Image (cartoon, rainbow, N blue to C red; front, side, top):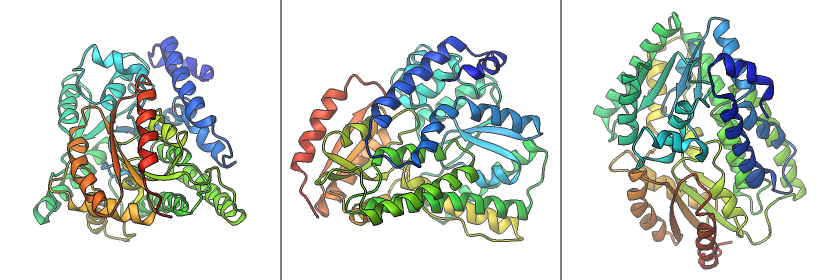
Length: 428
């Protein structure tokens, strides 16, 4: 898959042979879970290519950006405000790992009892499989869970230039001010990193670029409310995963073209979804690139995923940033306000998330909800109790699944999912 980039990998000091094994492992999972689908839109070809590009052409683009005088930061959460980075000529890219291949390399140096996303990400670095580790100018983390917070401490102790954004655990006037100060500090760090001063016109342009992407993603997800969606939930996940790593303007251009194709498919009654497929909402932990297991199991067990209540779903694109001009302070305040609306399980109480769960279930005509919990993701696992109770009040049954990135439990999960969908009442 990535042979043409071997010279770059070697120059970056990577383990080229092991990296090829990892890429092959990811590609095999992609073929099994995604490319095996039938009736896919033609416009998915571009988004399929992003899986390979993430460890190929995108690496070259980052190197070209740095050679032209730009900076590059690796991020680990959707709370990091990309608009500020883009406005300062800093390229942000999500570095979260979604493959089980690198987990053992992290478990040799870190506790085993932490979430697979953290282990997969760190395992890429420890194994020499991450092409971005040696070229990032700074890593940016946040405080959405204890495992992440302590991991950032360890990485900083290893000499990595690391910036941590303090995400408050409650929402109110006092904590909103704390978060606004965190966004301001992030701006200061990036100004130092880039050697530039944040300008209002550049920030306005960056907001428009990100809002364009959010609008395109919102339009894509809106098609899922159709009685027979023109695209599978697995393919929507692939698109949203790509949004975290691709150039935003190029991504938006291709997504807008896909949306046009989907609108035509609706007009013509074309759908890859079988008649009578159970409409399922997946919520909870994110499913980052490399991880398509749950969606594949649902959609090959008589269901269709019509909503993703996660950071690789609605949390990523909902809420636009007001496009204010000529006032950096007002722009930063608007950006901080938008990102604080994300309803992560780190917040307590989290009535906002319960309201959004109900809204999504009703809008997408959901017949059942599957709460996807990565192992040791305690916030979403405990909050699943309140989510299940909230859904029960509106007559939507739910199933909580705790799993990791391996395929070892696939058969057991399929059995549970099939049994759940047999009992889920039809609402159409």
